[in-house]
Image (cartoon, rainbow, N blue to C red; front, side, top):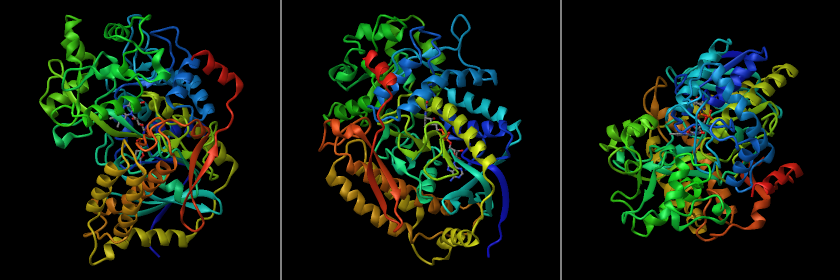
Length: 603
Ligand SMILES: Cc1cc2nc3c(=O)[nH]c(=O)nc-3n(C[C@H](O)[C@H](O)[C@H](O)COP(=O)(O)OP(=O)(O)OC[C@H]3O[C@@H](n4cnc5c(N)ncnc54)[C@H](O)[C@@H]3O)c2cc1C
């Protein structure tokens, strides 16, 4: 038997971004012992990268906003595949969760009368995003971290969980290794919360950092939990396209919220050419009206640059494919033009978008107060993930909870900007609360030594091979393949090729070779991450093949229209007893009449 330490916690939270921290805070507040695990240093999760803001109907800037408008915007943005109960809870609870952050010390930007300032963002009818310049995630994580560590939770940094442990049907712990020394550990837990974030590293061009390898999605799937909506992967319309070393880094939607416009190489503002029927009533029909909206004119409608991300990304791809793109294969995003309208434009841009100013000066030698940026779509956010109960956040496996980007349901076919940070704090809190309740009602389960030994054997197998592929090369090939064949525009033919390629990559991943020992060995880490990346890539491809329509973030060139019949179900993926990946349609539960009435009234 391999040596390993065993630690016991009532609630084990895997992931220390906004969702994990908020869950850990809530469980601790319920008086149970909490272990919190993260792959990198505490405070370095994806959440820290969030720029534009957190969506909550505080109605500080426009009193016409309220939870019903936020609910309706979220449902419309998700093309009605959303879990409506989650959308309701989210819209109702987000304002209190944001005020709570403020009570815990978060310093948001202010309105003139001292309230939390809110900005415009795509798909939100009124200015709704509470923000701190374009560094909102940093403020959020700093606040949660400072508050959380005083509640007594134990943090395990630079630690990767590689398998969940079960006793019968129930999850009773997790097993993993510390990245620095490669030592194994078993965590026994009465309840486990997954809060591991996204999957962006399955693609070549991504705004996501190295940590987002779909671990939580894969851990839950391997433990028997249902995944839903895996075909819906968000490509953010504006990532950097030049220079190549920074391709994919995000350019916040806040740039467009502050008046930035999209132009093709002919200087044409192409977003006015294609306004979807669903949004026609809410979209400006001339440039002057769009500008007035960004400056707070309450009678004006939003400019088409602030349509939902799926639509804006596709319009950009169309311009590039038609040969009207920028020199490096994107389009132009211009905020500098506002100097025609406001005298102190350069100062204002630097004040409102400090990170963007800094990012372009340092990485691309471009002063965004003087010239346009070149931008193009980048893999950004996973709408699909672990199916959870709306109220408790428990997955379909007892004892296993999920929150944040690795959970699914709230966003349906497309997430609105700002709705992730609010998702983290609303459902992180709920997950933490219900995991604590579950832990109080259930004891520790029994952990099978054989399951642990088998996990150890599998995880070190790559060291024992004398020949085999380099794990980095397999990961690179996977990313290229997913980018080319299961990207922003999809076809059956290409996705069938992707499935065949995934089979070959699986074989190669099973034969990768790692040199050296287990102490901080990034080749070994990559070899282990690869298994998760392959699982989520298979799930994305399978679901995308099954959805023979175009809706939200999922666009099929061979089925370019939205089909009413496909609006009636989610696609559910689960692991069958023979180890195969199965996919089923699951009917969406009939919406509550009062919520349906709200949607009708807001049309
Ligand atoms: C550049 C950028 C800007 C964004 N801007 C906004 C914005 O303005 N507004 C908005 O709403 N959203 C924004 N988003 C999206 C939002 O930031 C993320 O969706 C959100 O932060 C995800 O939070 P999370 O808590 O679910 O996971 P994360 O913050 O991604 O944290 C995941 C945690 O899980 C850990 N982990 C993962 N796998 C394992 C494992 N196997 N073992 C142990 N630990 C593990 C990681 O180490 C990390 O601690 C942005 C995203 C990016 C990339």
